[in-house]
Every structure is written in C-alpha cells, then in structure tokens.
Length: 136
Image (cartoon, rainbow, N blue to C red):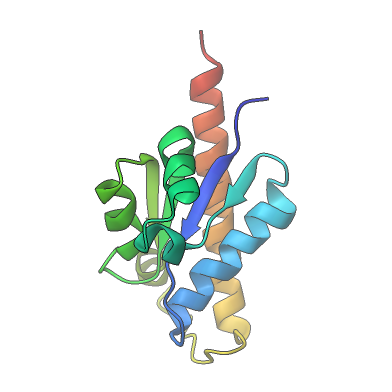
C-alpha cells in the first residue's frame, strides 16, 4: 500500500462551512478510507511546524476548503506541498442549493448531508489518485 493521502481541512472555526470540511475529513480518515488517509491540523502548517511541513512535502495532500478564500490550499501551496486536489464546500453547496446549513457548533441535518457528500467526493478523489499511481 502507498503512503497515506493527507486530508487537510480548513480551520473555519465558528463557521458552518469549516465544520462541514472537518466533518467530511473525519468520515474519510476514520471510516471511509481508514489506513489509506491521515490528517494534519492546518494551524500547524500556518505556524511553520517542521514535522507537519515535512509531512505535506512528502505525502500527497488534498486540501478541503470551506469558503472561496481557500486557506488550506494556499497554505499548502506556500509550503511546496504535494497538492493532489482541492475540494471546496461552497462548490458542493452550489450543486445542492436546497441544503442550507445553519448550525455551527454541531452540524444540523443539512450540514451533515453536505459533509457526507463532500466525504464521498474526497473518497472518489483518493481512489482516482491511487489508481493513477498504481499504473506502471
């Protein structure tokens, strides 16, 4: 098995989209792709933690951003990370305008639905990356 893909969600503390990005990451790392993925806290990268920086430079990374500011993607790019993909909650929301997450501390039903959809997109991207790297 290849090295785990690192899923780096935005911080977005106190914002529904940030909560959705983190919840999706947890579903992927703890359930859907357990053993194939791992995560790092974005704030470790922002403060320049050497171990975290080394990890994102040596592993394929997927940035998961809540909003169009793309803090996760931008910080990974600044560090020279191996950015394999960037997924955004706002893009999922545009595809499903009927879902309107409102709760922040605990995701409401719409927020959980969006997080599940995002987790499925992350999982598909990981499958695509792993299939691509398996080709000789």
